[in-house]
Image (tube, rainbow, N blue to C red):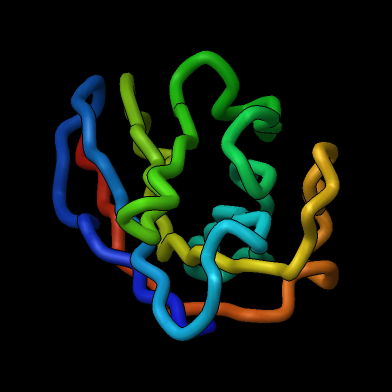
Length: 126
């Protein structure tokens, strides 16, 4: 499966942004999808994930209550709605997928995701 993240840009602190992860190549509904991010000089970190159906989601503590992950399997797309963004959210955001039809999904470990897309830059100004 090929993935492409989009929707990044410059946003003021407190604002909102919606990222999209478009998939192609295989049956998208087989895949759990996660969002990760990497800020300059920092390690990649987990942001959010959804299982194959969108019925189960999981978030990093620092984004819980502000970010929402959702998916539309008919459109082969996963979304990351980012609300009340903070300067600390500035990073390159990546989506990743793994073939997993468990209701639990793949969780927060990047090593469990086999397919990665190119990232999209999100910059939050203070």
